[in-house]
Length: 137
Image (cartoon, rainbow, N blue to C red; front, top):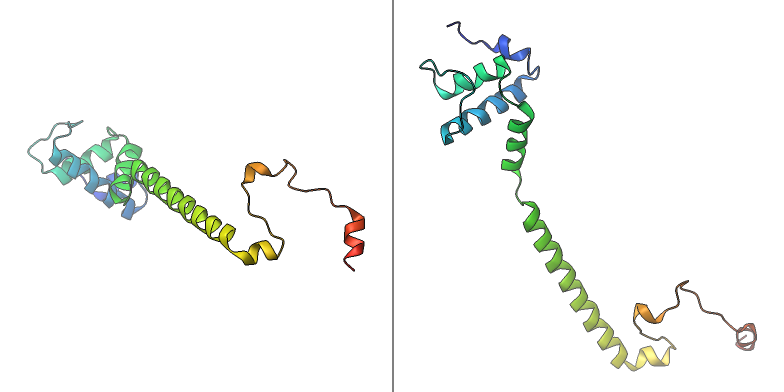
């Protein structure tokens, strides 16, 4: 068996840093029990991983996706839960502020009204009587 060299693998993965990460990830996967795509020939896992890369018997993108998912702090489900918790907290805070504002006399004295977004017409604008505006001057 010919020895595997970095030059054999650089043709497949030109970036040396990416090559080291990919080979390391594949070697760890082999250690965990993933099936080999070539004969072991009494080689250790890192050498087998490099030989697989050189022979192009593994899917590089699958290995690289495993690297990325291993480095992520949150998975998709955790992000959904955190987003739900944040929106619930914001909704509760808005309801609290709205109730506090409704009870506040300052809001009523200033002519401001607190209502629900469903109470507003679809355009967001209300007709104003021009005569009322002129009388305020």
